[in-house]
Image (cartoon, rainbow, N blue to C red; front, side, top):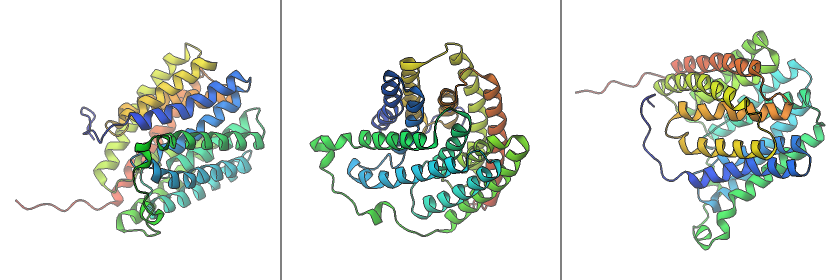
Length: 336
């Protein structure tokens, strides 16, 4: 995962990119047209649903994604219940991170792993505590976004070609529960970076704990290797710094309404095209997307204070996640 080279292509990414872009843009556009833009920003978070099992056939995703959506909604409910209490949110981050990691690794869910379950929990607690939206409206909007994204992901089944593949049993799609040696180390890394990240967050700013932990978990990823941890940490640090600059430029345009929906959709589409080939480049687009979406939901678009906070949080979390890679054994030297 070099900073100066792209990884080999793993097949066409535009179908998944299109689904993710629609999942984030359409709810914002529709709810803006109905005069309920804040609910649209919340529903757009449901687009995280389509990012899972992206390489599987639509007929198989039809069985996996409802479980993912249920997990995201459960994390949102827990976040809403914990909002208003820094201690409850901190404890919740630890519980959600470890449980979601155990399930993700134990059932071989694959990328993006436990990351978005932690982010949904933290975002839910943050938005409900700081935005004029009721807890019930928040959960309903996010649930609707998950359902919409699921329907978008199922669109290929409308075509005969999409229905031609034979469905695999759920036990084959999500084998487990079991943890092999690599999975146990990954789970241990998640547990360690989460606890330390929460302690760091309490020192930096309790309201930002979930972002520190999320940055660390993103670096842990789903690859059990020292080199991968260090490389992802470096990519995340540099990508976030450049991405914050991109956010600053976009914020000068004061995007809102339909323009914001189109902008976020374009960012999400680009992310899905490049994320498997160059992680740092993907972060250049991920960072402004998250900052714009969070800022829109809380009424803080254009705040460079938030951008600087995200840089600090990401640097702390990425360094922590990279350091946890030392828990993996060094690869055995090959003869010759």
